[in-house]
Image 1 (cartoon, rainbow, N blue to C red):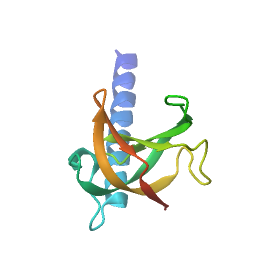
Image 2 (image 1 turned 135 degrees about the horizontal axis):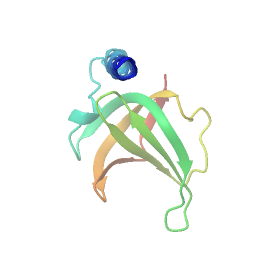
Image 3 (image 1 turned 135 degrees about the vertical axis):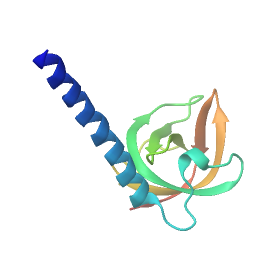
Length: 119
């Protein structure tokens, strides 16, 4: 019984730590004019802020494309820069602000060739 109790406490700590991380991200990225990823409307110019979780090179139709997953505590959006193999400063764990229009491709929210600012 003691092992189950310890396991429950450990799982509870992990869950509360994840919730705290999400709250901290939301607080850090909430400023005037910036929309949360979960609330970002499609086909409308938006400003989003978040942390890059992954950055990969994934060619599309023979053209190089740099893809990154942007996360802000509410959701994720795939940011794609066509014709780029790499961008200085863009890497996993980096906080950035992007501007552009969110769309959907194969049930995934995407943002093509956004303007960006490293934070």
